[in-house]
Every structure is written in C-alpha cells, then in structure tokens.
Amino acid sequence: MKKELTFDEGNLLAIYSAEAKTRQQAIAALEEVTQYLEADEMELRSLCQDVLGKLHAMTDEDYLTLELSPMI
Image (cartoon, rainbow, N blue to C red; front, side, top):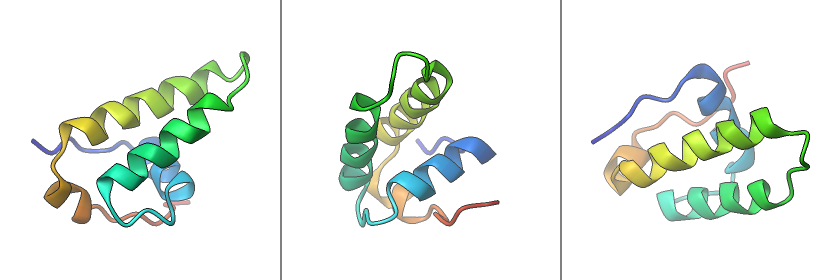
C-alpha cells in the first residue's frame, strides 16, 4: 500500500537518498543519516522515522513511482 509523502518528507527523501536506485537503498541511506543526528535534532529524527515507516510500508514498485526531486 502506497502512502503519500508530505512536502517535507519528499524533500528529505530526495536530499538524503539522491543516489538510491531502490527502496532498500533509500532505507539504508536514511538509517545511516539518522544515526548521526544530534540529540537536539529531534524534529529531523522524527521526520526521518516517519519517512522510514512509509518506505517500509510501500512496495518496491510504489517506490519507483515516486518523483524524488527536491520540491523547494
């Protein structure tokens, strides 16, 4: 089941998983970023966790349909 990404979630995914070609690579990229976040970066940590939850819930096919360019 595909879950829609919010504006902020889409930007986060586009920025931190720019090189990811697969859903699993995107998950790995965000998990790596998350481990380097400081204690005062709770909002960013929460956003990363939300995106990771959605990535885990979607299929590889759903991931491939995402438009992953920063929406700035």
